[in-house]
Amino acid sequence: MRPRLYWFNAGLTLALLAAMITQLMPIPVLFLLGAALALTVNFPSMTDQRARIAAHADNVLNVSGMVFAAAVFTGVLTGTGMVEHMADWLVSAVPEGMGPHMGLVTGLLSLPLTYFMSNDGFYFGVLPVLAEAGAAHGVSPLEVARASIVGQPLHMSSPLVPAVYVLVGMARVEFGDHTKFTVKWAVLTSLVVLAAAILFGIV
Image: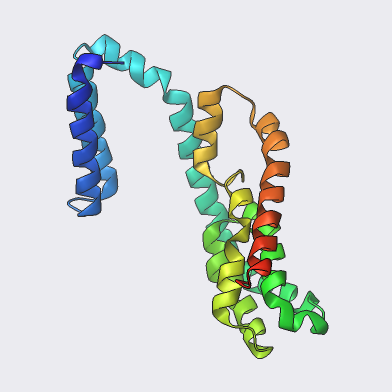
């Protein structure tokens, strides 16, 4: 904490946000410049700077590794056409009588699918096929799209979300313990959201 530099840090944060919103430079470049400036001003000593970097190294390495792993996983799924085949198999596995209820089907499928695959894989690979199947039974693509976000509370606990590793590291808990605690509540939240969407006619 640097209370005497509160206004400098607040101003730097606001300037960084403004630069990102206006797309002044690529976001990675802005973050590098912001981090370098914040470190230099808040911790003029090289020893203090190294200590601060070392204190956050675990989180940085975890997130960086997860980003690369998720990118490889997503690339394999999309590049090999596995996402399209999975989507086709899922649609063919849905009973014909459930066609008019593709909103409900999509909402339920979004829970496991957004947990075990990236958002890109689900929303760009699986969802268009589900929307097409729903349209064939008179279900609006908009309704299917609304239902598809039901699984997001669970997705945010997925091991494919790098931010989870940062939060788990800061909380000093094991990822397995975090998963055991949060998944059941995330599933319950998603089901409540889906039930509310059906009750209010959104899905």
